[in-house]
Image (cartoon, rainbow, N blue to C red):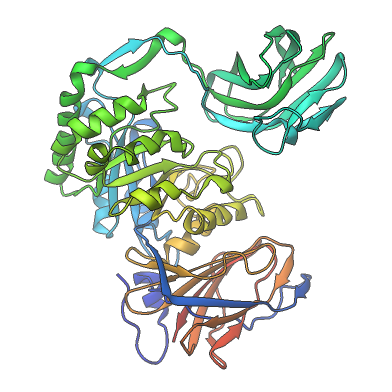
Length: 564
């Protein structure tokens, strides 16, 4: 909760230690342009509307999973959940629900440390207890995985086409050469070692074709048959390849017959069809009791869970437990009511609406859900809005419960790539209107905290939101992109302070004219991160005529805290 500021301005201790509240206003910053920066863009008007309220923010945070990567140390917990100058300012911790109750204490110390700092804690299971699970043969009608569009690939003797209906994205690729024509997907991200499934969405209306498939330059599948498809029909062809963490190239090359129309490829772990796992039909009650027992175990040890999920990524469960939408709804309708905690579902890996829609459309299932949870792996920004939730989700919360972005292969300090994290949070708050944004591992070379416990550039991006937009703040209306490449979002706190986060993705300095509707801005503080600065405090701004002209350096993030 934010501390009410004194009448003579905003205290740095108030902002960094206790957070601030945000109110729609128009603000600005009169700082000089960065040395060597491109010429400033002509000022544009940016009006914040404090009375136009959107979602209440629960917070920002990340996950710890001691069983997989070791627990956070006490010092790392303090950095993650403290809100001092050199802390991340996180207010949410996600922990796993181990299937074996003997391992329930693994993340307890981290959860207790987070609670001691005032953070919320929630939990997600990957699997039910082993004795409640059965193996079954699963055949994907529609494969799941990270999606890479063919029209964005490198093309040799091939072109982007739009003649066939039913494609996704901006088009599909048609091969022009019978031999040697190719489509090469780059940057295919693999997060773990093992056999992976590469599923190609294609059409072959003129007949069967055979192609070769290369991964990282090596031929992994020769003379692969893509069977003919009916007119107007798209189908799937999958191959498997052993891959390790990193970014890979995947090339489809013709070998004498031409090739199929390629729409996109999906990459995911591979599960042999007869080795898929699911909760036994007669074990739903026992599983609800298992989750409830975990809730009480944490409560008895000083951690009151804010919520507990039914299943992590039930639609991407190659390495854990699958759930159909019918199975999920049955559990929610008939068994989730016995869980003594808020219930989170369904945590689709890619915010696939077909996974959460059935919950929203089933009043009995929805009655036992408190939070619609989703992951954002590879989800396009245009798919962030959720009209059905707006229509039927009254009284429910909407959380983004896991992501890493833009990848898990680059250093978290790579700049300006790290700036994409701030861009992603912006869209999650403004387009999707999530109330929580939760990163994957808190401590990882690609995450907010480096392995040595210090804060990375990606971490600074998250801190621009987490340290200032505290639990209980409300997002208010402000232009989402007041000028090309500049993204802004505004938040108001219980004490009337406004927080504005401005992300300048462009290579030019931006000077928006900021105003607050119905308010007079007295003063503001601001913090800046760019290639050379990390949440560096800028000179105090004095309001003039109800607003300011801000200076946003190229490729930077600035958080403003305004007193009016």
